[in-house]
Length: 470
Image (tube, rainbow, N blue to C red; front, side):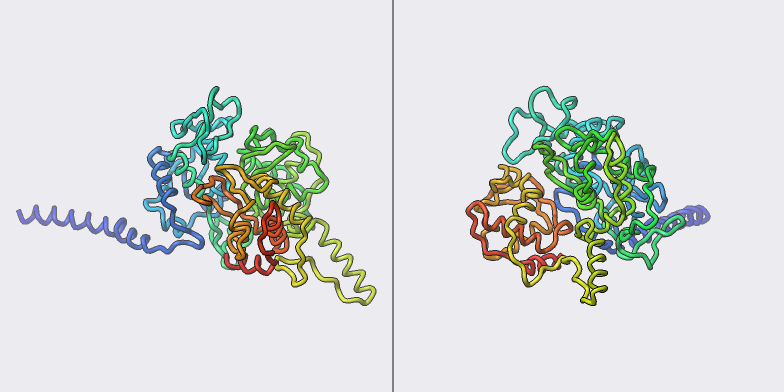
């Protein structure tokens, strides 16, 4: 009997020891891993969406773990322990029947997500993913505060409009939360991957120039296929009412590539082309790709599907990334050379993000910026779109003596705005990376003096103060 106790007791002790060593102690250790830079807890809606994600078996086909391998580079940087601090148990997955979702919130916008869930073939003709139409409702009239999902005619119901259920909204909120934050000082090394302490925090080659640059069509197509084709399609024809075509697009074929490059770098929302509004939101890719990569993407679009746009250079991408006008660098250098030859002091560089003390509200510039950026949602009448985008005409934040809310919204965006008890579903994208402090002051002041508004004028210094808070 004693021998049996020793045998079974020893076996149980060994089992307990193994469990402690390979499960309990590592779990305790990992539970103390601090959140990575920029990693935030899920909101209640995002947490609910995570339950929908898990409950529908999405992790069977989609992983959330980027390996330090070249073939995973299109999904983002390699995953780090701190990325999962607020998501326990981790939905890492083990299969890639579909693409990894680690960074999907930066790759695709909300409209695309809804279309993809309703019927994956509506945005990806070769997709083998099942549809999730049970997460949507078909209604004759779209209720106030709701937005219909834009679908190509071949996928739309014969009668009525498609709107998402609460579960669909939660799931999309969770998918949009999957935005991998950058790790300061992190850079992939030349081998199997891993951090390098000497790396810059910006994309490698972000300040590349055109020196030695040759358009790499193969690289451009590869980047386009993995990043852009889901919305604009590999045919370049886009998706009706949601994502505009690149084939024959004036911005892609124009001699001035500013709009095209700016859109790739900083994203765009509510695009209007030839009087037609496209509801899909274009996410920004400036933080994901360096100047050479973005030049390759732009040039691939400019030479495909019969397009004939003039080739762009990494230096032009760098100028637009820095908020400069194309050709400004060359002009400034030439002017400096002239001044030096004449014995004059060098001319000042282009205006930085900071405003100057000599600022004067430029109404024409403010209106032009508003018309090109804001009017698609808030309308040129300033009356907005009921249930989607709030009015600026008579808006308390626009007329308030304290411009903080208005400026902060233009700089950093806003979602789920509630005004006078009414919730507006449309998301306001951030414009801090697109415009200088002077430009944002001009936009704000145009809104403050149009449509009968009477808000006190703001200054670039007001904008700068709020820009530096984030």
